[in-house]
Length: 372
Image 1: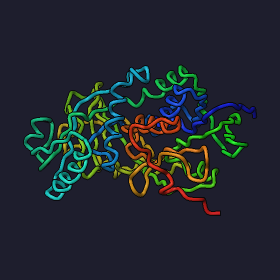
Image 2: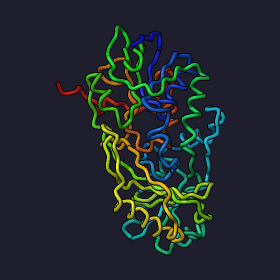
Image 3: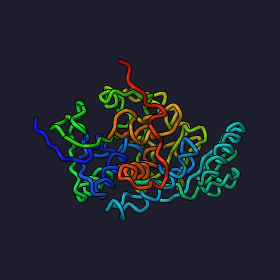
Image 4: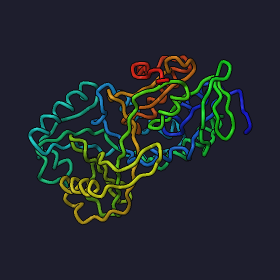
């Protein structure tokens, strides 16, 4: 195994957040290595639906990060060098019962107070905005900023941008251990990378890298199922969600309809083996048809599963790791595709000694010494 030294930062994990941190650090003058065990943005970052919702950040504190992330995807040609299929379609979130309507008003009031331009509208107004809706909603909210981007374009875009900024990109480089080496770290993969700092951008796979540094954190995971229909004539123009969180759908430019909403499959990030749960898939599709009846005859072309990490307080872990000088973490970002590029830039600015546009989310609130 060869040894490579002299890096200012080794970024472990080549998803949206790891790539964004690495890109801004490289452009800030640091020598950066990115290590990704598969290809850039091919796991959680590349297999999600690309939804950009200003109505569904899991915590009101994340609204400014969601708005910042949306603006970065909108202007990706300027800072990333490649357009990534950003579309602003506007989005509706639906309530089907009086109890859900009450929850919708509370949820959206919190996010509107935090800066999202959300309007609560009647069911009739919602159907004017989106004629494809069923008669079932009793209340809805609308945000004109909601949209999506094409997550499948990210790997190539970040690869070109990182190399253009002088970063070293090592794909299919499985990191097997991280250890202290002098005043920095030795990151063991296809080669031993020596770096003064290390950034763990490993998301749902963060438990083991933290353990190598003698640390632990309550980073959980969910195993979300997704489905995509065959190509259809236009049946829905807006982004559609429900306040209960168990539906997210949109029809993209080629006519296919992406359907998700957090219905769970089987799988564990430790093994990466996954399986679709048929009854959950059927439940998700029935919910989609309940909202948009024209989806009834649609045939499903493909299904898949993606992991998403989580924390007990629904807030990310972003910043320096306690008791591990020079090590940083970015994980637990539930709305990762939306906020990813912005929160990655926030961490990069912090590492570069700049004043970030928004605060970091100090990992010390949840990260502890690993049990001996």
